[in-house]
Structure formats: structure tokens, C-alpha cells
Image 1 (cartoon, each protein chain N blue to C red):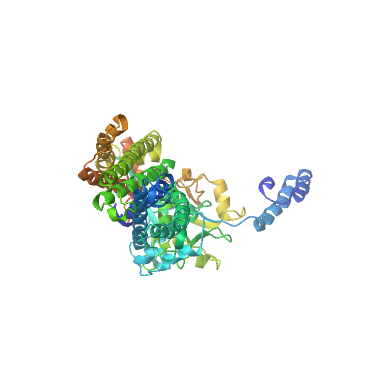
Image 2 (image 1 turned 120 degrees about the vertical axis):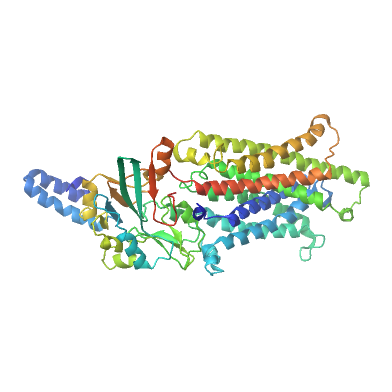
Length: 251
Length: 328
């Protein structure tokens, strides 16, 4: 654990540094693990997800469990799995890309909501929608670069993944994480340096989707295939994306 | 592809109607302040009156169309849009809601001051009208600009996310505003009895032609300016890279919407009206000959400009939704 990265008060860190310098390597490490736990209480929690695509088999268990958990109306998807097919025989591959709301740190959907019906929770950084306030103007659907939102035909309001808020507030993990048979999904507070997800993000080569949009997404991927149909087409290469949702094409 | 169109004809119709109404109000109020003020003696008072009467209705109809497109309305919550009035934030739609509300209120009051009989206003009618006109100019411009900002506020929609789009919508709003005044003036000519001075017939027609010339020449200028803004809109997008360049290609040659754009917007809405207007404006502008456009021209040209204005909204709204960020 690196003491420089934690946000403990300066005075205490200085003391700890001095101790660390004078102590032996093993003893120093033991003492320095303390400021990390102090940082947990001060840093703002941000729930996030890490999806290890080396363990994903494209079984759609996450999509199905999500449908069951929320009774998502027919034709709508909070969570879905895209298949990416590319190459020319015999050099071909198929990879999977599970998708869900990225619960961005800079959510463009929140910026455009005219009724304050959608916001980013301070308690856990989850972007939520209140269907009782939302009027269904579809502005957030337009603004989301990940196409994560849809209009729920039953409520008439915008709807999307909320990291299974009703489960996480009770300390359970989201339904898709629970259902993932490959153990590809890791859920937790990415601002807590001692959580498994932040350790994995620190150790593994991770990527996010559409980083150039500046939304600072909080869903990370390991070994994601960022191949895009339209870019491939303009280069004369074959890439086919099967979205497995009503929207046949990514947008 | 059809599922991806979240904002369809109601929103397109709204953007067009809001532009027409905002343009008509802005033109009316600025003409009143510049050349038509001081009661019925103003030279172009007639233009101001047409504009004032034409402004509120498109906005009201447009707002009703917007409500039709709401997901909550479709799900049976017919009055949930009231929630828009429970807050104000920096969302362009929230600001727009308050702008539109103010616009509808002010424009109806402004139109009321132009009625022959205005019970309840008393003797300060002219003063009130001028005051409302001073409010109406910025209000009309803001409403027209807001329709562009509404679309332009989203980086996830590269076709719309251009600072020039709001400018384009503003110029288009003004030109369609002038066109709608020109059109209604041609179809429903002012009754002479409403003229308090009862001018001589020749004098009346001279004045009428002056107004027609002013409107036609203004429309020509606005259409010309619109061509420039469209050129900038396309050029800067085309010279960009990635998603922006990719999105503009749908209206360029070979793109999915190129025919609608080049025929519907550029030829029907801009080039053809501009050339016809130029033909009638040039003699007066350069040689001080009397302006005599036949009535049919005063009807056909504004209709073409209005079709162009609608097609512009159609192409922009659709092209913005069939394109998006590239890469994942």
C-alpha cells in the first residue's frame, strides 16, 4: 500500500513517513496499512464494476437475471451482451461485450434532465432515475453516449440499470454479478483502495468504453474488444456486432 | 433503424413552428421599434401587426406537439409535464420551458395590443406595445437560439454538437418568420378601413409595396446569411475527424439524407427563393425602380422558404439521430 496516494491528514502522514523510514521494511508495511483504512471513511464511495472478459462466455445470464430482477418490459434492456464477430476465414474471432449503465462520474444524462428526475447519488455514486418525476422527454436517452437508457412503456419514464440499488443498499451484490457463472463481474466501491475491484483495477490492464466522451465511466473491462462496425467498414474490414437488443445497431 | 428515432415528427414540427413564431415575433417587434412605432402612423406598422398576430399560435401548437411526444403522455400520464415547472436548472430544456412559457404569455399580450379594440388596456396602449416589443426582441431571439442549443448540448450526438447549429436555427427562424408575414400579408391583404388616415389609393399601394420590398429584401438577406451558416456548419464538420466527420457525411453526396438536404433544404428552401427574390429586389435596390413582385410570387416564395425551414429541421433532427459516436 502506497501511503502517498492516501488522503490522510498531512501531519499524521508525516509521522507515518518518519516511522516508515526508520522501521524495517516488514514493520513499515504493517504500520502503513493503517492510513489506507482511514482513507476509506474520508473518500466518497463510488460503486463500479469490473468485467473480466477473459472469463465471459456470452451466456446472457446477466441479461436474464436483470430482466427477472426488474421485470424489464419486453423489448427493453437494462443489461445486455453484444457479440463481436470479426475477421475473414480462417482468421476469425468472436468476443463478447456485456453492457450496462456506466454510472459515469460526469454523467451527461444528468446534465440535460429538465425536471431533476435523474441524479448521481452522493452515497454511492449510482446514477438513478425517479420515475415519479421523470416526464419521459427522452433528452437523457439522446445525451447518453452508451445508449444505456430507454423509455419504460409501463411507467412512461426513462429507465436504466441502477446497479440493483435495492440489493446493494442491503449489502448484496447486483443481480448480474450474482448470476455470472464465469465470475467475470466484480462489483464494489472503486474509491475504496482495499476493495477487490480497486485492487484489480490497479493491477490489471483495464479499459472503459468511449473514454473520449469525457464521461468518466465507472464500468471497467479487462480484455475488451473495442472493434467497431462502422470504423471497420470504412477500412474495408469485416466486423459484425450483434447487440441482442431491439436496437440492432450500436449508436 | 426506426427504433433509434427517439424524437420524430412532433419534435421536428415543434422546432419548425417555434422558429416561425420566434422569427415572426422578433421581426414584428424590431420593425415596430425601428420603423413602425408611434401608433398607426408608422411606415411599416402593418408588418408589425401581421407578425404580432402570427407569433403566438405556432408556439402553442408546437408545445402541444412536444407534449404528445413525451413518454409520460404516451403512457397515459397526460399532465405529468407540469413537473417541468417545479424546477429550474441548467438543462437547455428547463431553460427552454421557461422561455417558451414567457414567450407565449408575452406574445399573446403583445398581439392583444394590436387589436382594434382592447378592453382593459386604457390609453397607454402604445406605450405598453413598445415596452412589450422591447421585451419581445430578445425573447424571440432567445427562443430561436434555444431550439438549436437544445440539440447542440450533447457531445454524444456529433451531428448536433456544433456551436453553429444554434446560429443556423436562429437565421432560419428569422427567415421563416419574415416568410410567414409575407405569405399572410399576400393571402389576407390589410383592409383599408383599418387605416386611420384613409390614405389615397396610390399612396396606400406605394406604402404596401414598400413593406413588400422591405420584407422581400430582408428575407433575401436572411436566406443569403443562412446559406453562409450552412456552409460553415458543413465545412467545419467535414474538416473535422472521427464522429463529427462521419456524421456530416449523411447529408453530403452519397449520404442517406443527401437528397432531402440538397433538394429540400438548399434548392427549394434557399437557392430558388433567393434567386426569385433577387430578380425582384435588384431593380429597386440598384436602379430605384418601383418594386412590383406579382402576388403569386409573394405567395410561392414564402411557401418555398417555409418548406425549406421545415426540411432543415427534419434533416437535422433525423441526421442527428441516425449518427452517433464511433468506436466503443
